[in-house]
Image (cartoon, rainbow, N blue to C red; front, side):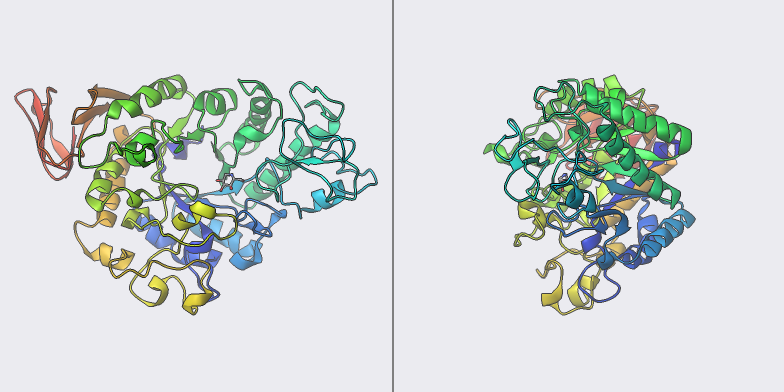
Amino acid sequence: MPKWLKDAVFYEIYPQSFYDTNGDGIGDFNGIIEKLDYIKELGCNALWINPCFDSPFHDAGYDVRDYKKVAPRYGTNNDLYRLFGEAHLRGIHVLLDLVPGHTSEEHEWFLESQKAEKNEYSNRYIWTNAVFQPAKGFLYIGGEAERDGVYVLNFFKSQPALNYGFLDPQEDWQLPMDHPDCVATREAMKDVMRFWLDHGCDGFRVDMAESLVKNDDEKRTGTCAIWREVREMLDKEYPDAAMVSEWNAPAKAINQGGFHMDFYLNWGGNGYNSLMRDYDTGEDNSYFKKDGKGDITRFLNEYLPRYEATKENGYYCLITCNHDTIRPKFNLDDSELKIAYAFIFTMPGVPFLYYGDEIGMRYLDVKTKEGGYHRTGSRTPMQWNTEKNAGFSTCPADALYLPVDTSPDAPNVAAQETEKDSLFNTVKELIALRHREEDLQADADFEAVYAEVGKHPFVYRRGGILVALNPTTETVTAPVSADGWKVIFSIGSGKAEDGTITLAPQSCIVLK
Ligand code: NOJ
């Protein structure tokens, strides 16, 4: 396990929208470099950068055309190497986004694979033996290639699935995992990883980590075997490199696949969803809404068994949001967000902050861009100040990659930095607290001390620290004895007296 993860706090950057230094309307590597001091100041010591590789951008870069070359719109490979170096100088680790399940249909491997004549890449993707032989059970495309066959997709039409083989081949076109051409796919992906790790990157967020082996079983035996092999490579060659999976199944990803971390993703109706985004059900009972209708056991009932089952091997990670998810500000105001973030930054595992959530950037109602659809509203330019284009870019507004939030009360970094009780400063204090207190970091154990169905507050223990949260507008109490403990952090106010913890409305206290 890379030791640095223990106290890591990640900042996710959607490179298109972070900071534009050459006035072309889209963010760039130099922009990220210029803002590294900002990220450090905020307290984040690790980055995850969304795909920044050469791509036709039919899915915002998740359709990679060349794994070893960056997209010119962000700069050059050398700029990215410089970013690694500058980040390291500031104690910041950098994860890139690895997309191992599919490439762009414009990737050279695919262009070769679709040729009628057999070649080294013929089996790099999954093809049937004739165009009128369907790939039953899969999304597939026929009639586009020179080759007589249909090919399997992994996501959008532009993203053909790479061939890692089938766990239990059923048809003549399905190759077993140990077929030399499937092994070659695996080796090609390891080669990509080595390329970036050798140039100074510190690991990868892995896209659709579950999607490699087809017809895999319920336990994902085939896919996990591949990831374990990758972990062995890392342990041997790059012991400090870290991997986080987009999977949301930590028992598989961490225990079986050897990932260091797995994301707790926002899936409709799940435990994470019940915290901040419970609005798709008709009635919003999000736990962090101040109306107090939420119920923390909806989260705990799902989280606890997963946490217990995986805590010895890795980290099940909480996020404020990501580039696929509606921003939390869509549903929570700043006073609610403060309590929600107090929770996220005091929980076990490694927290991930999505750019702009530290100032409560809004989800915007904008037109789809590069395959974003409803996700596009969470991908708009970072709001730095009140200057042109919110300080994101000097280009004309109509040349921006995506529009900026132009509403008069749009939050921005410059204003919140100077405002003592701003969301930004609360996030900064919370992250600083986490860095100060080992018991609030990734490893210290977690126990729910007071968590009653539909009741408030929620009190939990991290190692030798107690955290008490009251998201509601009422004063609430819990029969938890912490008399004599010192309040080392607070939002709002609270106290521990006479065997009771009392919290004022919308408050959080941390006791030691
Ligand atoms: C998950 C990524 O987060 C998402 O943005 C992308 O569209 C799909 N995987 C396909 O790569």
